[in-house]
Image (cartoon, rainbow, N blue to C red):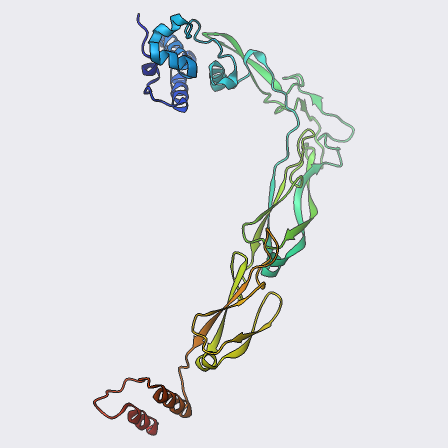
Length: 382
């Protein structure tokens, strides 16, 4: 019987990428694996055909020859004599993948010894004032960490007793399960379900740690926060996380910053923005105001003729730059407030000013009395 086209076998196009070929192979391998199709006598042949197609198309050189010569490439040393040749490595994306997929890895009874394991990372949210974030600060925080139990010295066993070797795995922490397949007998290595991979069992648990061998304690950690951090900034403290298992290194501690809002300022990167309000006459004639800064109150001159929304820059009064020297700036935005209630004298002065400047004010009808006459009439009736 003539062989089917390998691309057709895997259900991919001739321009399929390596990832698409691998994905198609895995999908079909799961579908047609003999163990999953014991009632289908043709599943085994189908499974072999899928593997053969994947072996050729997943190898760049073999695929190139196959694209040029088709199945005739097998007679030219292009592969096909043994479709499983060179597929023994599980990491090569070949036949070993099938065993990882269905049997969890560990061909031929290989054991995976449980060695030292790194401890888990921890995270702590630290609240800061704007001044603390701007200039940096030293803080002491308290964090919970697991430590070896002092009562049992980490063994988990009641003082005077010792853990015993697990009878099921004989201290290895692993058990082997044999499985027969069309390719032969394979052994799957799994974690022992009785001792949970520890290789020993605590028959008389320690009352302090209840057999865990670990207890949780609060630890005080000194943290140096650099100036310039902002909400969301993270500081990594290596080795301050949870302790590792079986002699493994400790994890890391991540300090996440949260800066409290400050009603005086609005932060923009390394700059600060604040607003001051002046009257129309102050804006016109100029004035000096006291403005809050991170360094304390400061006298700021508002120039004559300042317009609404103009900004006065205070150089170097912002936040310390986290990377690089110096500080940002503070920008003072001037808001001009127009009075809503005037005394009679204030009205007269403003009307006189408007007359001197030739400015039309009010809502008087020019066809009637003159504007200023109407204003005077109105003021006379008050």
